[in-house]
Image 1 (cartoon, one colour):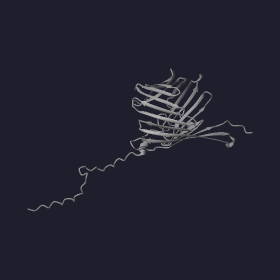
Image 2: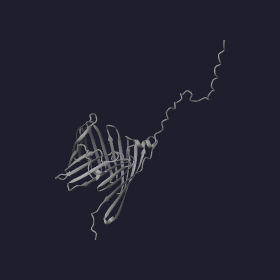
Image 3: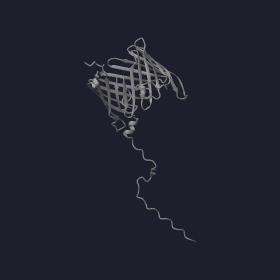
Length: 329
């Protein structure tokens, strides 16, 4: 009988591995990288507006035109407003990135504090809406009646489940109640009730939303005219936030706060620099008041040990006021 070939020699032995009992980790996918400050920035709230934070932005405001530019979104919001007579006013706004806008006509009624506003969204608006005319591809307008105690709006809304338009009613009513102001804000089936008590040192604002029964309250304490502490708590989600504000005269303001929902602590410094200059181009007298507001926002991400310096925001607001034409002597 023929002898079978000898078995192949065993592979060379590897050096002992202290983790030889642990199966190797397949390398089909790259290991997840730790969260970076950029990924956190995309999820963070924006710089504060009330209890919400805003992105870095630049704003130009004048008597007839205002432009608000969002640096992160690279989007501009253009607004204009002017009078058509002693009792009629025209307003228009345009979102450049969304290519959507709104036009509105406001008529002052006979009694002071009463006005009727007719507004309509414009799906595709060009710059010509601000200067020339309207795009007549409009939806049904919304009518808003304003009165001293509030306002009531009547319009239409789109149902998401069924592609159809239905009537929408919203409004807000305010009234003096004991030592505070009671506010009822409704939007179709939703109703929000709020009561605000305020004196020289303390403000207490409980609110409830129906039919969700979401209860929250805000508390503000003025220690001195220059120091204020605000606290807000939501009973439904157990989220809370607090803000401390200190002012140094009229040109310097410091704010710091914490938001439990985003686990975010933040601080901001506002510096107001007024610059006055008078010039006469083409013999037309003009007075320009340049108001530059620098807001250096230092946002700290509270994630265990790591804290990230997030952003520095510069906000500029320019207010141009045209004086009447003076006769040339």
